[in-house]
Length: 402
Image 1 (cartoon, rainbow, N blue to C red):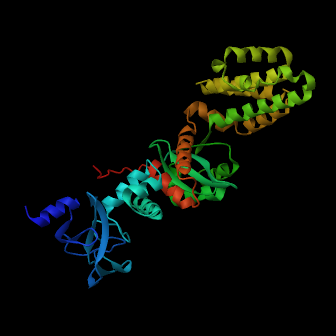
Image 2 (cartoon, rainbow, N blue to C red):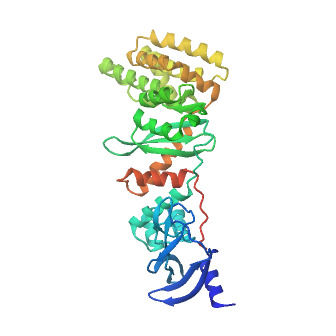
Image 3 (cartoon, one colour):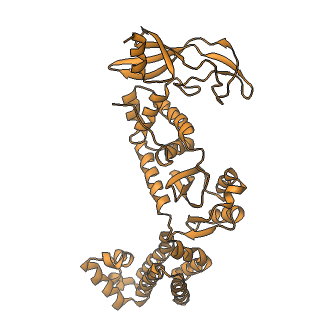
């Protein structure tokens, strides 16, 4: 077997010729593309070449303990679309000093561990890891992810203190993140629909979200025909928080007799089937000693049973009965929660028909939280969005590591 053939097989890149090698603080392999005509490095169109650049090197996988570079002097081309550019080479991305295979290994490691570990394993700078991730995501992220969007979920994610948020949009059917941007206002969410365009916006049938006013406003402006489904967890949380407010108010009102109420928080907020024997005893004591607080507890459980119905008609009747009871309960926190639920009743009942929740979006948010914690936080929203797409955007990488 010829030495050039051995070098080509060691490099592992198909569309190049290995011409020779040299040693200069590592193994330098002289290569050239197999294609006879040059293409623009930016858009990929065929373009006439007129001048050669100086020889460049691209970092490749190490062989044993030796670093490896691919060396080639690329042509300058005059692209009809992009102007004067450097020609495209098959083994590297435009404006990158690393081979595609090297960068994909870096991105694969970044999916599962922190950047500092990737830096030590691959022998590159910490900031270089972030730049490689952005290039890989830009190249491998599905360009057709906005096509055939029918059921989406939206939620905000707090990535820094002082109200720094991301808006994250998820495709329920393909179970992946399709869009993210800094901010959580209606204008931020509106950018997503502007990127979709009128035709693709018309195909959206269902949107799951919490009761954030900014998101609702953007939906009414851009996709007024889409069915809004409010997340069941956030609906029940309204009433759960109201129960806790009633409990605190009753502790203040009872004064010295508050001993029967103190320590009852978890007994009041937990699901009945998760109560311990001691918590059941506490709940029975509350039932005997404080009717107002026990009334709030019954309202919480009644709402949960109303949302458990599978038949929309029965759920509608149960919810209306609950609203009448809650609005007349003479418990201010519960009345306030009931007014909010009455306002968004149609979106809440849509859950009964579709059984859709924002659980998928919340799951991606939890994964994003883990990514942020292992990096000890992100200063730039763009870097965090790149990591979000890398780990949750459907980017599949096949590393060439042994």
